[in-house]
Image 1 (cartoon, helix red, strand yellow):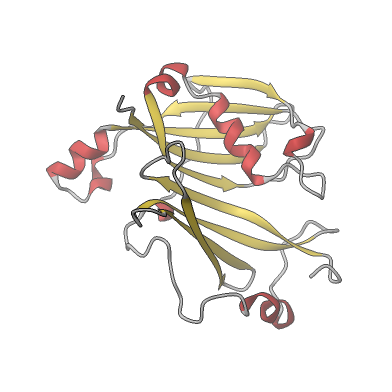
Image 2 (tube, one colour):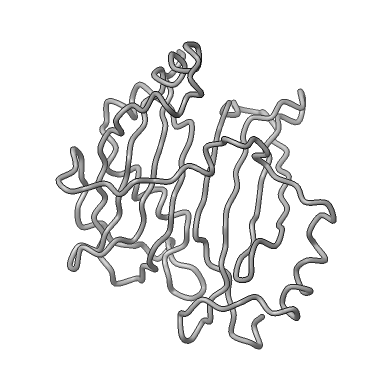
Length: 229
C-alpha cells in the first residue's frame, strides 16, 4: 500500500458502551477486520471484563481506501486485498449481528441555528496523524465540546455514531454544533417497554463544520444515560 501511495481513512464509526470499567478492572479487547465492498473494509471491536467475561462494549467502523496524493477514493485492488485479508477471519463476523442495530441508523443533518455551540476550535499537534491530518479520535472530543454541561454532569455517554465527510488539517478552524434529537417512537420496535427504555436515554445530534466556509466536516449522534451514583 505504501508503494502505491494508498491509505485507509475512516468513513463511519459506531461505539456502544454498556458498562464503564472501574479502577483496577482488566479489559480484554478483541478486534478484527473484513473486506466490505470494492473500496472499503470494516473493523469491529468487542470489549469484555476479563474477570467475568461480560461484554461491556462493542464498536464497528467503516474505512475506505484513498490515494494519498490525489485525496480521491480508490478501488481496493486484488494485490492490496490479499495483503490484509490474511489477517481477517475466514467466516464473516459482525460485532453487531442484530438486523435492526444502532450502527445502521442514518444520521440526519443538524440544521443551524443549533441549541448549543462551541466555535473556533483549533487542532492541537497531538490531534494530527503522520499525514498532518486530524485523526478520527479528535473529532469525538470536538463533538463533546458543545454538549450542555448539565448532561455531562448527570449522564454518561452510552452510544456515539460519527459520519466523516471531509478531512481537517492543522490550520483549520472548526465549529461544533449540538441539539437534542426529537423522540421517534418508531425506532423502538413498537413495545411499551422498549419505548420507556429509549426515553430514559437522551439523544443528541451533532454537526462539525469549517468556521470560515461552513462546509460540513462530520455529523454525529450520541445517546446519554442517567448516571447511577
